[in-house]
Image (cartoon, rainbow, N blue to C red; front, side, top):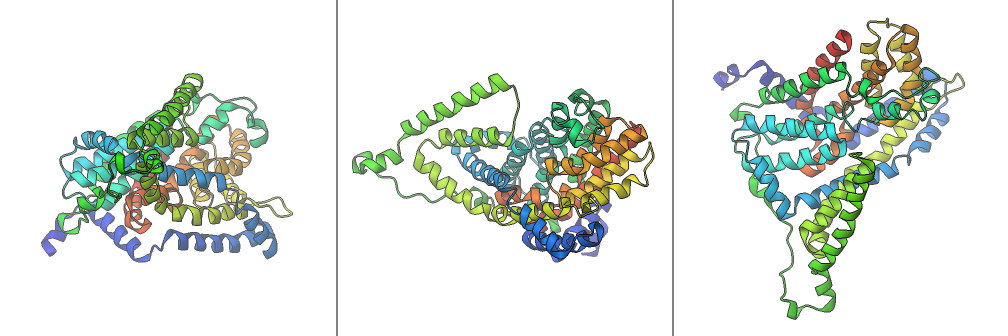
Length: 459
């Protein structure tokens, strides 16, 4: 045993340490949300001058503000599961998964596919990455399933710097810039200065190379690898024995009618084509879920097959339905202001501004955004909290507004690696808990943090 331990690389030792640590001490994500709620409740009062009941009112007032988003995320899980369980889709996915022959190749391929998909659209990438990781796990022997899912989730680092990044897209619209930035930005800032800027593309280029490699180097030694039985991943929903059409009742014939599914699918895809023709490649959660749903309808062939798959996928939504309201409540407390007009999120941001200069301001903006994101895990919510503080401060120091905005965006994406909020859909698809993958995600957090920090300082 001592010989095996001695042969472990530094990254393997570090990842083993963090995995063991979090397996032991990281509670269920719901307990994590409860602890965050209590911590924020205690911190808000001295920071903003609010009384206990004021904070409770802010918490309750925000509790239901993520209902629409929670439903969208639940549909991400359900529609993703329904599409992935369709035999035709699984065959195509298996062809792509067949590229990987070894555990190392599997980790690199999953990370790259997930990162590319998240750069295109975060909702699409979150589902595709987890589904693809499951398929790889069923085909490649000796690959660590926990690291495979963590690698898929690490692709989520790329979303805010990509085509669906809420902050660069919000500032590109220009519709509310002057109000939300306290007058620091009057017009629109085009994506050529944010998503497609030299700084952002350089950071992305380095991360597209280093994050897959980092994940690959973390793969445990054979004696520490946790694999999963391929039969458990490939098991299909148990369906009732099919009757012949002659023995079916009229209702059963409708439930097993391919014509109904194809007619409904034709309507759905007619709208999907119409949408992209008129809007370009403007992906959002609604159109992603719509596409997944109608792809599942067509691929399953019959309404009954789809219903069986959806009923299985819906079982994985418990964490989202329970926890998202609590995070909405945390956001309510973080953004609530006392008589002084200060909020806890604002206090954190202003603390970093106070120690910044023209050179260090983007770095400290990134770090402050990472901390705020831990309590306000929403791109739009974070922008609303930090833009009124960081954008005017950056302007006063002579820092380019686009760079400040991207520093906030990168910070918002960065600490998602240790925030279970966004991992819930991927974990539900994978059938794992947060403690199974977060140990690996810590090293992705550290590695990406170094790359982003250097990029913000150099460019």
